[in-house]
Length: 153
Image (tube, rainbow, N blue to C red; front, side):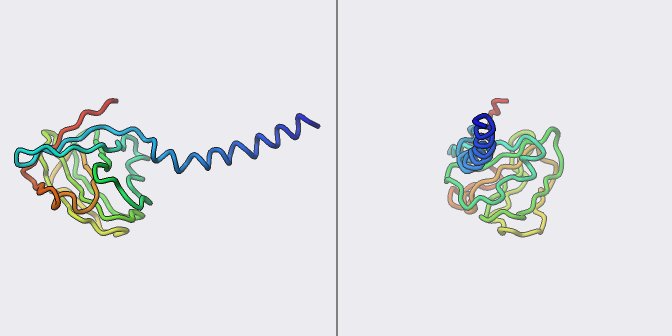
């Protein structure tokens, strides 16, 4: 009887432990450094990396805020037209569409939360960087900037 009660207690405790870890999991995600060099000034960010298809599909959905130096980068295996939407994204974002050489193809500023309208690059890009909406304007970043990062994986 004791073994049955122990097994029952464990079976109930494990799902609850997993659920309680979900909120802190977002906080413990590893980040990589990204630098945007604009007009002779370096702007440094620590961003999450969306490497897998699942991570790229989820992106920054359901987030209610981003730190001023935070965001997410979406590297692509090979250059392609970048197309994103804001479904289930609750905060405005600045999207930086990045060419293979680190130059910026396009900046989509203050994208509209929860919009289903595609936000598309102007040409083929190797990555997309998402930062808090208004970051580009606040820091004076335009398409003449360069973006560099070093992925640890």
